[in-house]
Figure 1 (cartoon, rainbow, N blue to C red):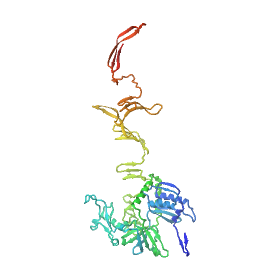
Figure 2: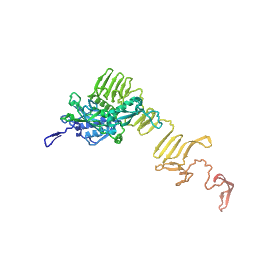
Figure 3: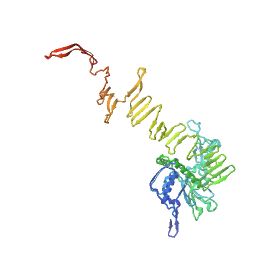
Figure 4: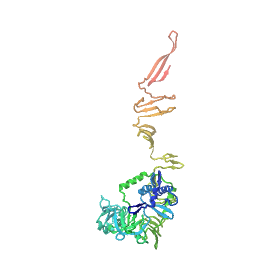
Length: 593
């Protein structure tokens, strides 16, 4: 854009190639279980489809290096008509960190998404040399000029009520702290306790405290510097570029650390007035980080990408990282080969080290920590291993988990936790919906089948029935009171149950009818404490013994004369003497006539 004022002075505003991404939009889409690289590739593919392929208006990109990772590699994102640049910035950079970089290799325009710079600039910004002016976001109360490092918690403590930690007193002349004399001159003594909970060796603890004083405590500082880019004076020196890691040395602040170059302003007519901004944006507070992390967890659904996709993306990313390397220093020493981001092993942060004992990578300098390594004893040390097929005689592990967190197997305790699990074998099957089929089972304990407030429990020699969360009764084996030789099958009604019944559904369907019911108390037309019949009883000519009638019954014999025939005049013509009927409990048990 060109602007001209009243005096004819022109102001020209230019924009970088990242602005090409403002010329395309992302239609409404939903993305599940994608890695940062896969999501970026999809957005760029949609952008490219809206751009001319050749000619002066070619605004297409090719995804290059992607070093930003997601803890689960399983993003859940939406797009909804925003520009491609807004989508990338909001859904990747703001949530996962890192920065975007455009670079050219031949005719190809690459878009890199980097967690941190892959180039350490050989220039150094040093107080009293090329550093002309300096401002920072560091508040006086944030800086520490004296640090008391606390290491691993000790098993015993000299004060019973307090916990005691490893200190540097034994390797620091009896002092428990380290300090920066130059920083004390400017800020006075500002003491801070810093915890390194995994460090148990005092000498190592002291090294970490010294590094914290001059490096780590400035991790979130943003510097605005007026510094001379020595490349403008000496063409053979490396020019400062956005994204470079720049070493800043400022003894008055006790500072000696690398910062990323995030902003560069060049005064064309006065190069000595050029300014650079180093460091990250103002750090997010605890609540802001917590909200961001919670939102990310809510958005993440736990479905796993296919193995082939995971492997392909890993190969693509490895290829992009390796083939895009344009900086670095190869140093051959007597007993090893070093590949570093600076030529000096004392200042290098990213180091590949190869010697007779193995090959390793450190991102904290020459002396390690080497978190990625292949050693001479056959061990491979890595945070992530991506492979198509893994063959092994033995795998030792603490806990095995899938990427989405759906299944977890603790190898130490044998505990298996799964949101959905299926097993399929000839004699045993378990579906993901919980349906179990087995040819046999020996269970030490009980089996419970439930639906709402209705439950059946089978175990401990009985079948218990629950309704409305009350145990109503059970079926099981039991003995007879007073005898240890008599045993039988019991149908028991618990005191919480009101009745037990045999019921039948009519042939035509409908509600079940109670045909033989014991009622604990009277209700409806059922008598309490009795067995109520709801149908006829066919005794099949079997006897009904020891019957007692509710209104009483007679016992005894009834003697009578039986009339055999009558005359026409109304007199008895013939009869039989000695006839008798005998009753017991109101029932006729004998008759003679």
